[in-house]
Length: 169
Image (cartoon, rainbow, N blue to C red):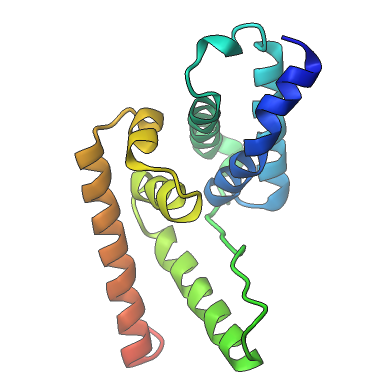
């Protein structure tokens, strides 16, 4: 595979790889390092890349596995989930502050979710993958993905409602 072919194949989803890495790791720097590692691995195996039906799904699976390994390593004791790519430029300052506050609460709530639920929420609600793709990436059946996503959303919704109804926990 030529360099131009490789670049045209990988560039469309490199940002998704970064966002998943950022969701799973501590910081922008950690996510950038992880993204670079994934792209480097893809480059080293560029001759074999054509054998995969869906290179994007394969890359997301690589990213998930790399990040989970990183989280398990001793270097990663302080890593946490952070998500802050929500912006709405057409709203008032008050609405923007409320939206940012809600996103901060959702991020905090997500920290307490089981690892698998965090990944599924990221892939489905943030990256907009369909259930078939997520099932392939996580090596799970679609029903299990739907159940896990439903439970994660329910937990987030309930905790967010408690916060808004009763004030700070």
